[in-house]
Image (cartoon, rainbow, N blue to C red; front, side, top):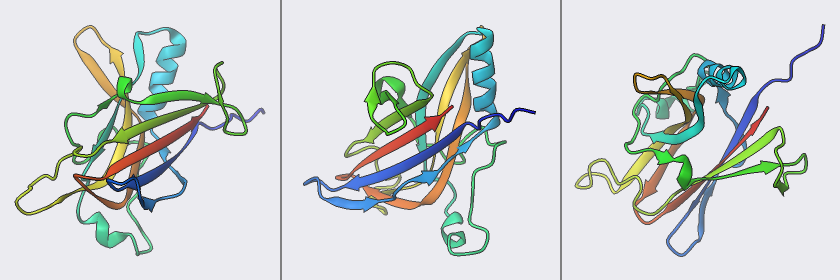
Length: 184
């Protein structure tokens, strides 16, 4: 029996200060391709109306996750996830991201390949602190890519991938560059 190649994803977060100084680099980590992402791919191949990647949502997640990171059971995304726990609105639209094809050596190429890289920039001021009188940073703990099925009764967002990560306190002057790579 022939084995299927798994759909996989990795991500990297790079946080820089106002003078472009490096504040944090997460390195590369795996993300979770969720079941709804596979449904979108099946719909695309079947030629159902699907707009592709629509947006990247980021969020505060759950503050209780912070204490779990140094335990035997850190918080993780599951393949059954379909939404973020505590998303920020508005999300980052696909038109505000850079999408490129990559070859096997991570070089950008112009023709379609089995690898796609998305780069989203959370610029200074986005997202703003949730309560500026008490917090001067926005605590980021989760993100997800979403696609849209045009269902006729409104656009239905479908999560493609999901990540729960250690909290990143992004202040209003910092920029977070999030790089996501998907392999099909």
